[in-house]
Amino acid sequence: MRGLRAQAVAARIGEIAPGTARFVDQWPTGQDVEILPPVRHALAEVGVRYLFSEDAPTLLPFAAQLFVAREVLVRPSRWVWPRWVPTPARRFRTRQQVAFTNALRPIVRRRRSSGRLGDDVLGEMLRPSSRYGLLPEEAIVDTLPGITIATFETPSRAAGWILLHLARYPQAADRIAAEAALLPADPAATTSTHLDRLPYTQALVREVLRLHPPSWLLTRRAPRRTQLAGYTIDAGSTVLVCPYTAHRDAREHSEPDQFHPERWLDDSGSPAKPGVFLSFGTGPHGCEGAALAMAMLTLLTAQTARCYHLSEPPGPEPSYQVTTFEGLTTAGLRLRATVRS
Image (cartoon, rainbow, N blue to C red):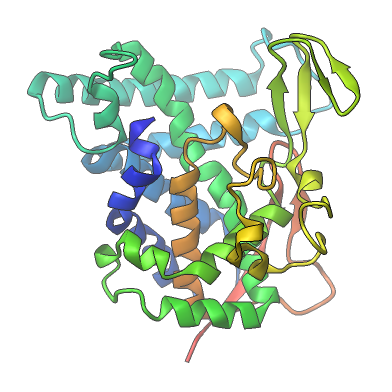
């Protein structure tokens, strides 16, 4: 998708940075805070604004409800119902999807009728492409709910792990803070050049994603009969790919269980090498929003470390619970922020 390509994201860094900075500015200091809800709200605002620009305030409440509907739907249950059974969770999800599309449809029609398509992702979808021509309205309103959720669901899970590592590895946080000191005082003035000057921050983000990929289990369908690692895979078979274990393959990562961001700072640790880094998938079905997610997470990490020292609550109780249903998450994560002097 054109609006989510790396070049398009790089051109709009100044629109992404203010949202992540607002999250940092609003973090209550000196107290233990359950941090995933405000992270999710901040990244949802960033993602929806990236997709819809000036129409984001209208759509953000509906996007939040889409996320709630998804969370309700994926909660573990004693019973596994066939997909065609209209359970309460599925009916709730359907209502929220309808509400989102009902709010989106007049925006699509207004932009098309006025000719002011916009420079955001929606605007790109409204423009004809050489491959697909002019997309029909139904294709746009059917596609965008899923894209909207994707812009902040997985990044929010990743952000929990990243903030936890800033608390547990203060020396790494100090190094990020030193890099982030060069960011502009006005977040809106941030550019892709500033992002390029955060190599260690980006390396830490990648290392956390390597150790704790939010999408820890991927599915792919074999289009034809093939051989894989000595096994015959029949055409149409579903293949499960587990980034969590693949990222711990010592043939690709030295000391794979160790947290070592520096591994991404040399060419041997390049995420471009096929099969080495799977947190965003790979190949033609890799995540289209990878560049946007990396920009959001890098800026959130840098701005947080620049302002705060993070710590876990004292005491024997863990500061979070690991959940694996749908995604690898630090459920209930509580952290304390102390202003960095």
